[in-house]
Structures are given as structure tokens and as C-alpha cells.
Image 1 (cartoon, one colour):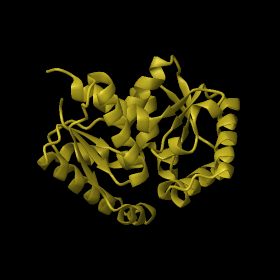
Image 2 (cartoon, rainbow, N blue to C red; image 1 turned 120 degrees about the vertical axis):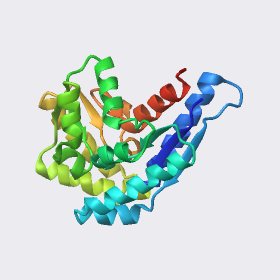
Image 3 (cartoon, rainbow, N blue to C red; image 1 turned 180 degrees about the horizontal axis):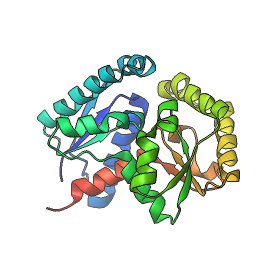
Image 4 (cartoon, helix red, strand yellow; image 1 turned 180 degrees about the vertical axis):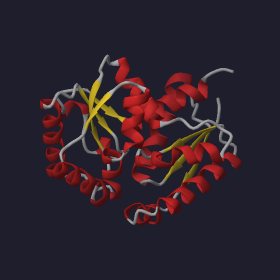
Amino acid sequence: MKTIGLLGGMSWESTAEYYRIINEETQRRLGGVHSARCVVYSLDFAELERAQHAGDWGAATRLVVEGARALERAGAQLLLICSNTMHKVADAVEKAVQVPLLHIADATARAVRRKGLSRVGLLGTRFTMEEDFYRRRLEDVHGIQVLIPNAAERELVHGVIYRELVVGRIRDESREQFLQIIRSLVDRGAEGVVLGCTEIGLLVKQKDAPVPLFDTTEIHALWAVDMALEQG
């Protein structure tokens, strides 16, 4: 099994989910007491969050690249950025290391296509929903049409992520607000909805939704196991 490098701490709440899913899936596939070969580099999210909201993406890039290089030095044979938003700097990470980076949007697109869907709603941070680094990859590379919430809904989603989910606060009121936004996206033609922030799956579950939900944390983590167990 190849060694998986997890670039986490964005937030640690979702990084813990990555670690759990990867190890549970590895044990399920290999049996016995197997667990994943894995190294984790956990950033201090406070530093990264300040840089994000200040628009200082140069500083954010340096933090993430430093972590990626540390994982490579530690023996990681493939890398995951455990955050949708920080795939904004995925190109810089790929240039900084020699090992493969598994892009979360590619993993998500594979899952959407396996369901036979071509039009999805996207929930995430304001950066993920409004900028083109994520949506363009889904649309231009994978041919998946992306719908995003309206401005007020985007602000609500962004606020819940940063004020609640990244610190482990799970509120029923926020869940109902997210489900209403999901229903609005469905009314506009979304065939499914991408939970394009690695913490949203902590709040919203498939059983609550009228269409398929694509939990990017789970999808990304399971793809990592696929690739780590691949021969050759």
C-alpha cells in the first residue's frame, strides 16, 4: 500500500473524518487489523483563515506548499489537500512536489458521472462558490454544469462554515437553512448537490435531501484508498 499524505487542519474537524474514512475503508478491503499507511501535516487553521479573508493568497499558498513538501519528505507517495477551498492553490502545490496530488474536484466529478448526472448545485465557502478554480474544473474538464446559490444564500453558507462547522458546532437551525438552499437549487434544475466544503457533511446527510448529495470528504478519502492500493 502506498503512503497517503494528508494536508489537513483546514479544519481539523474534517481532517479527522478523512483519517477515519481512510482507515475504515482500508480495513474493510484488506481485513484483519490492517490500517492505512498515512502521514498527516496539520496546519494551524487560524493562520490560513486570516490569509484567506485578507485576500493574501500568496501567504496561504506558502503555508500549503510548505505542508506539502513536509509530507513528501516524510514519505508520502500521494497527496490530498483536505479542503475544497485550498484547491485554489492546487497548481502551486503540484509544481512544488514530485508526488501526485489527488484533486478533490476530479474525485467529485467521477462520483457525479457515476450517478449519470450532468447538472449539480454547489455549496461551499464563498471562495469555492464564487471563484472559478473549482467550478471551471467541473465544467470545462468534466462537462458538468454547476449551479450556485444566490448572494444571500452564499453568505449564509459561508458564515455557517466559518462560525460553526470548523469549530464543531452542529446546529439544527443551520441544517434546515442548508436544506432549504438545497431545495432551491433543485427547483432551479440541480440533479444533485456537491457538498463542496469538507465540513458540510458533518451537518447535512443524504437521508435529509431530495436528490443525491456528494460528500466531497468521503469521496476524496475513498479515492485515496483506491489509489494507494493500486498496483504498479
